[in-house]
Image (cartoon, rainbow, N blue to C red):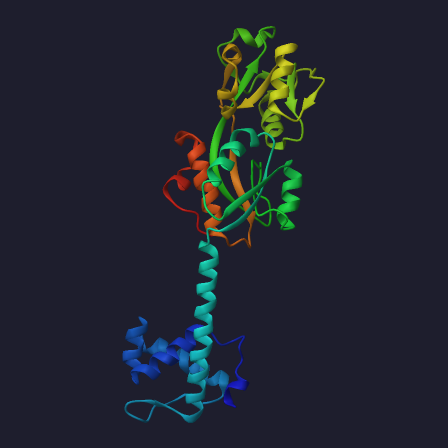
Length: 317
């Protein structure tokens, strides 16, 4: 059988589509017009395919042109190949757009309190979609994402991570929370470039926070914090019960008690921010589920903080 000898690695689906177009129209120029290309391009692509097969597909001496005996077999097989290719494309598109299934989500501790409760509530309203969330530190999330133990994750990364696709969600400011006993309390705002590290209570294992704090703090000042916490709430308690100050994300402000709002001070020149993103593996294809999570984030996060692209567009992988 002639088709057994074709080189699949060299042949392209586009070439097969050109062959079928000529078979349909029995005229090279009309086939080229139907394909939206020049007649010379179509002819050269079919000629190249004939050379690869080492056969003649069309008898060009006939008017209208017609396939040779070997060409008829090529055409019949090309129809089967293109049919299955279309099926695969439709299956892939269906899988991408599917809005049913489980979402296995990782989220870091300094983001979870502001997103997880409302995100659960939002997704519970969507039929046939369930979510499991795991509060993990950044290094654990990256490891589990790459091992396909998580489908997606919400976190802040200070740099691009190989093998992961980043979808920016929102940007939030960082603010100082200062004890009335600390000298900084007397200031209306705090310059982030001269902010002393002395008496700073820091977040443990939160690299994006630590990186920004280290960049902005006065590193020449003596560091005297004796405790690194894994949660913002613990840091606030440390400041309230002792002295010093800490840095908190903007989304924590509504969770503060009314009497503690006076402890907040804006950080300026420059204003430190963190970008929070959704991460998936580069081979992840479930666009439908990604867009469900993104839509949930848009319901939770104030419009002024949202990334402009997710406001305007759906996510396309």
